[in-house]
Image (cartoon, rainbow, N blue to C red; front, side):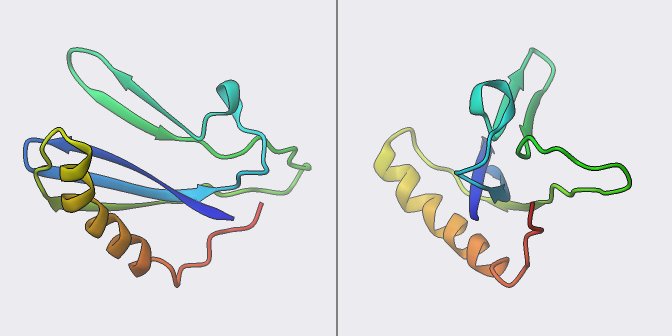
Length: 103
């Protein structure tokens, strides 16, 4: 079981979302573990769990961990790696003790 990360940057504000991802699982919408919707008024970053058959009376969970922080990457891969990657790795490390629910 792995962790997936998506990031939204608005000026110097960052929203980093961390969630469980199972590369061997089947996901909806052509195998997507996340979807982004944008219109003139808002942006939505939706994470998706794997497709499951859940027996009657049973349940499943899909957990997201959010980090709101500051950072302002430029539009180059190097700048993104230098300014965002340390924040993402630190955030992933800070939630590594959390037991993501099994499917």
